[in-house]
Image (tube, rainbow, N blue to C red):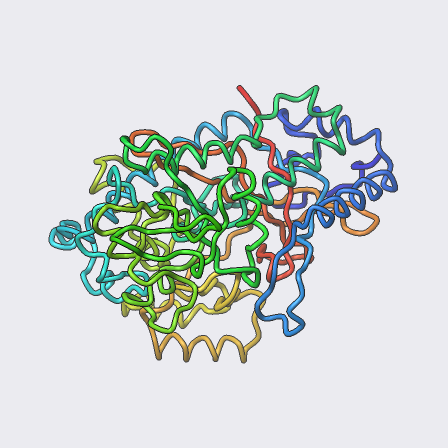
Length: 478
């Protein structure tokens, strides 16, 4: 039988119990898979990968000197999240986003959380993502983070943790939608027997979120997706979402500020733009305010935004909440702004700018995961248990030279999912990035999210740029 020799080992397995029996919510899938041979599964895997390639589901790796687009590796065995687990995650994510949004509104205005001593002022002002030009900005409906991708992991005991928050320009939702499309065409019968929540309505939810930002008196507001261009690593996603929403995909050179409004150049002249879903980082959106050498943004855009004549999603300045040092204070934000205890836990975090924490980190580099405060994609990170003495010495010096820029966390035993590796099925570590849309009073947590899988044996790094792939994520209905 296909899965008879699969060994969950000592990790939390998303589909199997410790004794090798299927988890109750995964039993239907496991029983169905047992009727397949490894050759049939391989054939399905190859067909799915070809389908994704033909649809253009690719990404670029900036560090690759060849500069070629790569197919995002896809594994045919899905990850299943029970209805009970999802209800817990959904509630916890909504709480977290509310607190983060209140935090952003506060630090760019009265800064009460700083004045009340809950977060040191130096931590805020030294954050790379804290942008002084955003002080006093009032985004529509007071929403700063319209689209968030929050990374979650599960430890050996099955407990969920928030690994990090992504509030600037979170990517990956296109893979979620295309993975599901491929799975439904490959295994249509299993979707008829299991109560799997759909994901294909995300573009309509996103468009509704964006339209909600436009002034109510506009009968037909114009929405655009702003992309850095074809050489961006997530360009496929930018074009995909624009096409799915039925809106224009534009670059900075397609936009201009005229008569106090943002205008789009068209063959029929200028057309006013009301909402911009920007996939360009803060530093590049307006050369008059941020980086003067930027060719990706629009001169004067921030001033038009400040005057309330165009809406931006996400609001500039949200990157301060992506800082991994700021992350450590999110539980305090929840208590401060909401008066509630956090539902979802952070991973225990050591802040290297604090003397006691730094000393502990330096003495235990072989056991900890060290991360740079503003790096992503698996870069700027030391996984102590996998590191060499030379690597630890290098990171020790980095920490001493710039303690504010580093945090450390214990090495979690990330949960695993059965994964097709050549001609056998083996467990591989995974994380989960659900996508949350904030519309003011309403927060929508899209059912599922991007399950990234570390395809290298024993690896804990799931990022595509570091050899990771993805799986379809099935959230079950109650």
